Length: 238
Image 1 (cartoon, helix red, strand yellow):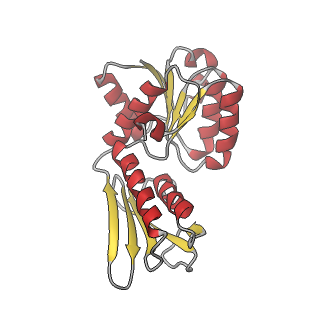
Image 2 (tube, helix red, strand yellow):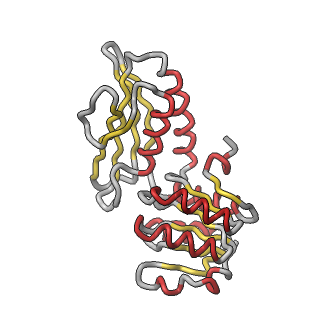
Image 3 (cartoon, helix red, strand yellow):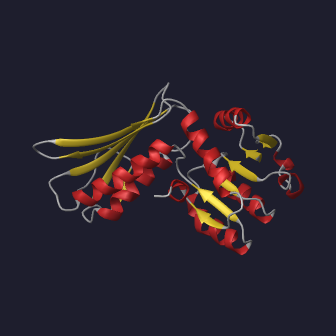
């Protein structure tokens, strides 16, 4: 598989290392200092693009890939105000776009558990949910994209919560997300249901970036040859 890497920070370099170990080839590396190389001609040398850049550049990168006819896997977060626009562009160009807030297989299993627990808790209003996420100090967004995904899953299933807030203090209809930034911390997400008599917690702890990178490569291989908009649930068959 020939891969175009868009975004060449720590995650991009981890993806590159694992890709080479798996026998893939990186045919294009794009970062902030050489974005002029993100041309249709260069993109067509790849089978798929993997995009882990910055929120302010993600949509433009995705658009360039779709217009060049290249399937694109995107893991950049905090740009989702333009997601519907990206999906429309994908359909218009008969392309392929796969977005996930987190590519770790473990996190996506965690998502499934979170959804089911929230479904059960709809019938037990004595339990108040909250989230806590811990990441390294270089992480650009807070709360994390994964925390927002977890929160949205809860909001879809708990009628007593209407929206999330990024603070510890929360009104009865608010879902609290607490964001902590400290080093070293690849990523921890904790969902807690508290009542007067007991509490229930589910937690995912990432030990390295390799889990995210290997999941992104799995998604890229799955996406080649497909058309439409997808997520990790499609890749994993949930």
